[in-house]
Image 1 (cartoon, one colour):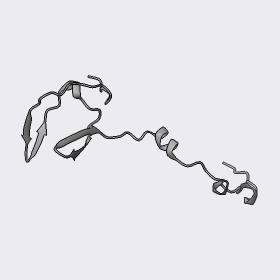
Image 2 (cartoon, helix red, strand yellow):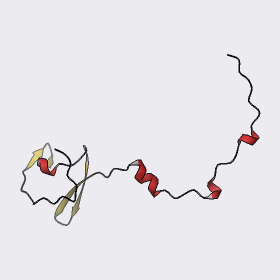
Image 3 (cartoon, one colour):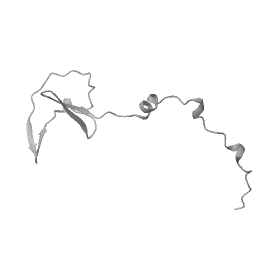
Image 4 (cartoon, rainbow, N blue to C red):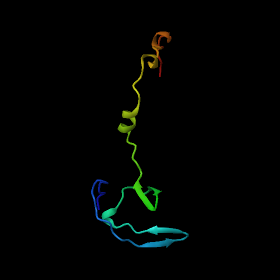
Length: 89
């Protein structure tokens, strides 16, 4: 089943809790399926919130970077290099 956006409102459903070794677990119905293999879980008062891990896509990370300033420019090192030598193979 495809992942539903968090904006898709679904009515609350009662689900079953069970034990998995020493941990309590919950069965998540298919229509509430989350993407990936791991989630974030936290409490807000009496509520237990389970949410997908945020995906840090490269484009999002790059969009948050500050632009380079003139003092951040790479120096021109070509003028300090010796001339290239011919290599015989």
